[in-house]
Length: 424
Image 1: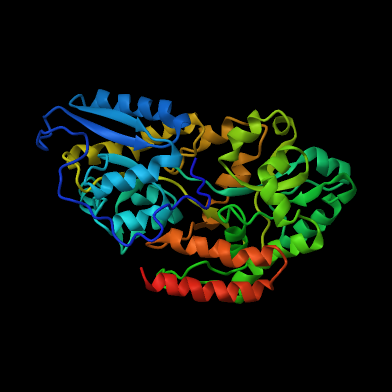
Image 2: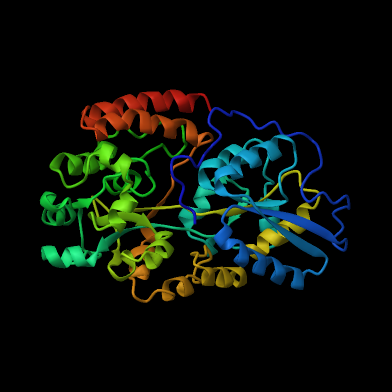
């Protein structure tokens, strides 16, 4: 799973990671001799993916008998705290998972090994991955990791509630206007039923998508300026505040007490903006597993969906940089991606996603998630993403509460965000 949420980039206020020159990684004391027997540490955070990661590690060792992989699980809740401490002490794992919000911070502070020379020497084709994902893991024109997987966002819907309201199921022809017309019919306050929960706490699933669909931006291409003063960006925010104002969504207090996911899983909302990672959740939930399907997000001025994914990176202080690169290169290969796709994760390597989509033929996964990759926009990041993401919550909450005009809230956010970016 590559869902980020608002607590993903946990290094708020950190301007540098003080990485010592202490040797680190697996703890082996051997040289980088390709014939030496070494053990590489590989840090991950998702327990559901550990079996797949161990299978890939075993397959790699079969092809490289001198290299053993120690897959190390640290739960998401403590992963970045532990990683920050390890990096500060020069003891980061040899290879580890990296996400978008933390990438630039780690890459520009000497924690990650630059891989461009190795990519060129081994002729690794970066066009084998979605361009938006490669761009996400590029900083100052340099690459510090290879994409592992990706996710996009779709419109999940409750077929039972649509049928009861006489509304046709959403498809690739839906626009914002189609969505709003359907929302009116799907709202029944007498039953406590709403069209959707206009969530503020998960920008990856909600407002970032509509901002991009409106032709706006969250942050400038050079990550120097906020995009929130742009009228197009404000239109993307207004999409959600208008739904709350019209009564098609519960108010923010209700969604704080009962998160939109739970509202959808209990039949209180008819639609849910959710990621490809929700497949496992909705096919296992007793209520949703026979009632839901998924479609592409409605179009605004244009079609767009947020793309995010993980990358495998190498510690700049690894005792075994060549072996670590060999493992990352293997993880980024077509062979590894085909195996990964069988585990419920969308592999990043182009053309290997068929197994993921085919695993649930009852859902329109291909149309909702994979076919949207060409119009996908990378998750917005900077060198200290978390600092301004906290500002988003602070300044946009009054607009979601209908206490402040969304344009005024966005203007204040843009000013505060510019000040934050100037400190990076």
